[in-house]
Length: 62
Image 1 (cartoon, rainbow, N blue to C red):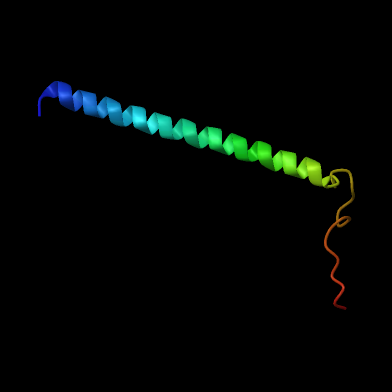
Image 2 (image 1 turned 180 degrees about the vertical axis):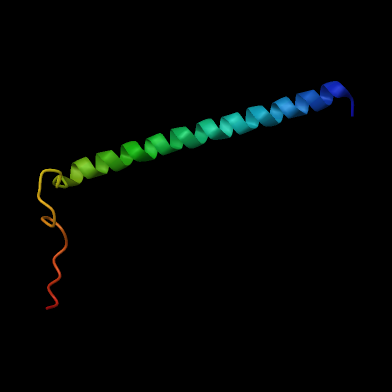
């Protein structure tokens, strides 16, 4: 294998890796946007301003 074909194959592999990384990031951003949209549609109340222990699960087995 001559030098130019080795360089060309290395550059092709690097380009493929970069495209894979970009696709992964775009997919993650799309999934995060969908998650936000679903949470908005479900109307989950925020517990940010509640005291500790308020809004948690209730253990009614007592």
